[in-house]
Length: 349
Length: 95
View 1: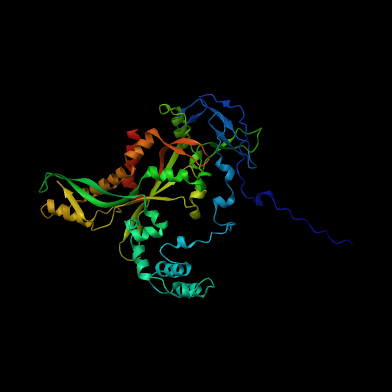
View 2: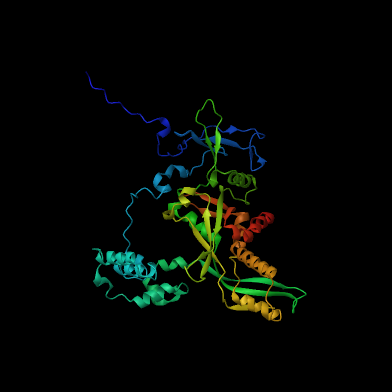
């Protein structure tokens, strides 16, 4: 008798998984725009009469609808791949070997590794920390000769400073780029009016001044972002509505929410801007930069009360998946709110 | 509460209130004032100018565009929300 033939196992559809694909690319030539009746479309509570163009559907039935006569020239979705959205895949790009310049005040890699271990590995010694040290010293790239002439005290002193450093002439000669990270920070005094009521000894309003509020110019941060070619490719200048239409014939399409640049609020702001009168004599395309702020005060030490209260800025024109990806470096520090105690006081009456 | 005023603030109050400290209400008021004063500095005239008239930037694709910053979200935890909630309202009133 013939043996039973091996049964071919087919995974049921519900268990099949596939990697999410990109949105369909925008065609080079825009289809004729579909005029939409004003009463059917309301965005952010305001009806509008603009025409719209639909992109082709991708394998999941997702398509984009731009409220414009033509597709945008700059299509960030073209450049998206899994690597740009997640860190979990192993990176295909080899990290660049840093040059001497990139080790900051450390004169070479060996010195940097030791210094990094000393500073970042906590004050208490542990077995794990010891093993780390052994790994550093035992690695073939570590050379004891490199650190023989390292001036540790000087390095620690330099790392502790963060201001007026570029005015020092001998450091300027060495031209450390990393020091310029601090450039662009502004230090301001903040004044508040403190009311003293009639029941108090000296009624009236007095000014109280708090010094050393560190912050950055928001416009400078925006300009820096837009000039950054790495981020610019995936920066959405134009919002769109994302629709899901699994079956072309039977389904009118369901709105898909998820990104700020596909949200009704962004689209409403964009359309309001397009409808507003342009700057005199200006014919440049106008775009929205979506600012997303965040702040959370943070304890710096396990014991003690050293705290900072940073203010962060993200751009809503970028995908939330990229913003959540730490190695994309899309978070901008823009301010450190003043909270520390014992600040020098100056008051004016 | 997060927005602690510096210790010297307490001395400042003691000095003008005959050695008596600030009431809870005054502390709260001053913390909020300090927070909003700092936001007043962040959202400076340069930013308001950009908000109203845009900033012209030559993008990496070679096209020059005029960008208008708009504030969409503010993420903070529960205590910080108290300090923050008037911010957006104020800005939208302004324009």
